[in-house]
Length: 328
Image 1 (cartoon, rainbow, N blue to C red):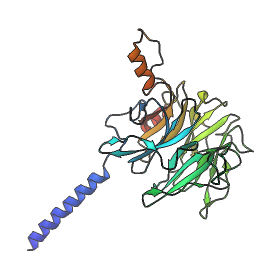
Image 2 (cartoon, rainbow, N blue to C red; image 1 turned 135 degrees about the vertical axis):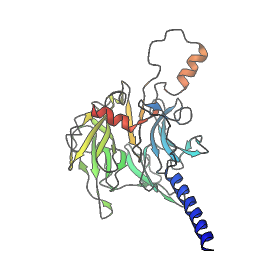
Image 3 (cartoon, rainbow, N blue to C red; image 1 turned 45 degrees about the vertical axis):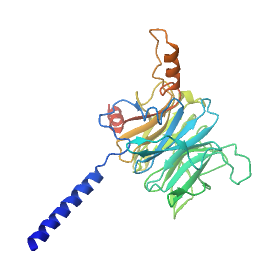
Image 4 (cartoon, one colour; image 1 turned 30 degrees about the horizontal axis):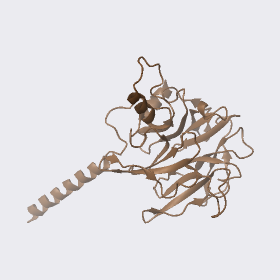
């Protein structure tokens, strides 16, 4: 009897180990088998489609993706959502809290129960839409989002705020055009005190310049900051920069090398929570070269309506490839 029970226990224990090992190593929706040393368009034809697709934000389990679709002239921004099911991304739909106003810059918290974004929606129902952008949040309850809530001061100001990201200690980094900065838009951090954001600190001249710094991605452990900056108000000049946190002081920001920057616009930097991939958006054009032969009608129509056509697309690359490039 003891032998039978021992064998049964051993079999159950082996099954438990195999089950848990398998689940621990289960691939994420964005995992790829081969190395990605060069940026590749993500989910070509489903997420990146030939529309102006940008600003990806994955849920912590990787099965939900919020991102932004914009009009070609940037006249409206709308947040879309797609779900990963049966090994593929489903057809994106407008997020339940978006569609009426200009909404952008989605970002998940670590637990996946809060999603931050920016919007020009009115603070009070019935008021006209605002002339600037504020940071809002939606919180999950019973697998559905509650009504959007605007964050108060010091996160929001009378000017525009952009691109909230949060480290694992709850500190929020964001761009803002508020008065008293170094340039047109600067990057700020606000750290929670007793559960509330009470002050907003300008990150200083190592990062902020007389130009514009808009979109900061803060490392989950607060060790580095990747952000988008442009010397003028033209987004066509926007590039990525990186700064490192050395004992509470930020190093002088360095411009990322090619192919992480290009002659096009780069924006919305994010690193996956497992630190495997760097996701970003770019208006780079994969056909941006001389054409050897005349195009056919069908060929041209296909080219201008698919991803890589010079509108925004979402790109994916190994984060290790970026780290190695910076070491060089």
